Length: 241
Length: 309
Image (cartoon, rainbow over all chains, first blue to last red; front, side, top):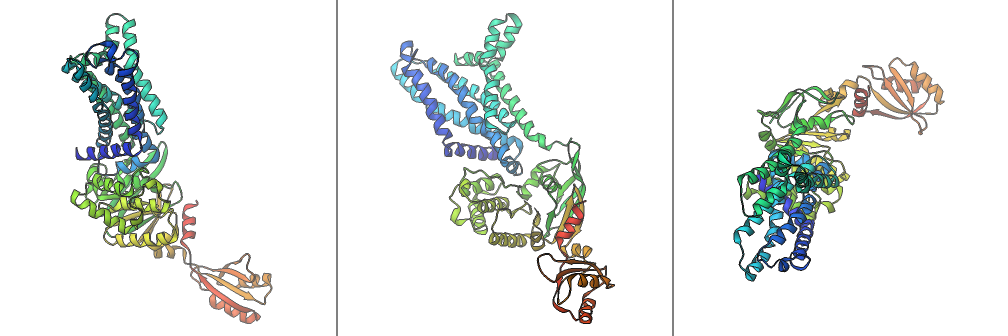
């Protein structure tokens, strides 16, 4: 655990040293703030004291921001050869993968924590359904964790950050929207299958305040599956064939 | 800690990068790993550090098997990879702190170790700079500091002196020799004088196989059955001198040295010395012998002999 945190801490400080973190935070808060408070079907038009508007904006902004922060995680280490350095230190491949995963998750959680003033503001404006706000945040965190693990996997299979980014978007878009669209065009069990694969189905049911084990199982299985694949990718060098 | 390799083979596809190598390096030995590019030096080092697994055989550090107890082995090894990869965005001191923490150096000792390494590697003026801003030589020092930060029993250095200036090279060699007294060091290099200066033992590897193993004197003896001298003979006709020299019983080969007048490289036949007879020849012909310098058989020649075929 300690080693995981050491790796995560290094990644986080490199986010903040290289401005990635600040750009990401400013852009995330800017976009979601603009659309939540100022533009289009904003929170005032909705005339309800909740954060549904923010959650549906964040659903898309995070989708694009997450690959941008995960793309360099392993791709850059593969390219510069520092991965060799890291893997010959007294850490396991798992600790490396988890450390990187944790660093991205913490950065996303910082971004989400900075939107808590939205919550407080809405609270001032009217009676808030606290449960649905917190479950909305939980939904965003689970969704983020899913895309982070996908991003880490795509980053592990290449040494080119752009490829890692595009591949993460490509894989992510299926979960994000394509499976949902397919679910609507197919009836019966095929439709149900696509609907189960869609992140939006599970995200919506959690952000509505229904925390079902079915949804948690979905998110955690994608996270673990992709992290296992990333670990296997690292361990591949080490398999005598 | 001894490093023991037993029948290690590593294939990349059909090509054998390392072919059935067995090495035993004892504690307190500095082993120089020589070989042309692509001979398998780096692969062997990667196997010892546990980065890649061999197809056959095993490497052991002390009593720990690299394949079966990689976590134990990693703690014992300090490794400077080829090309010295570093995190350019990190300041030197943070980088060393990270490396110490990740290698499991106790928290209370980390600061002390960092300062020791900074002093040892001469990084004091650069310690707050980002690694990306450093010159190649300083980066190399950071790489060395990183490899030694947890005071490892075994040091694996892949071309440790590339990019250093001559003064730094001397310092680093001295440092490696110093370290080699208590620890086991394996270093690879293309630079032959370097191995002679730093290593107790030299291992030449070619196409994945060990082709020579021994101290530099031992290896030199293998080629030094013949004596090589450089002579300068004046007042004689060039072709005549060469012809006459070649008639001597002890002389094997005569080569005029290009660019310098009246200078010849003379190689004796095996187990003979040709100096006296050359002198007498000069006296007989009334030539003026103005220079006679024995040339030491060079490791370079042995290296080329062994690796060119």
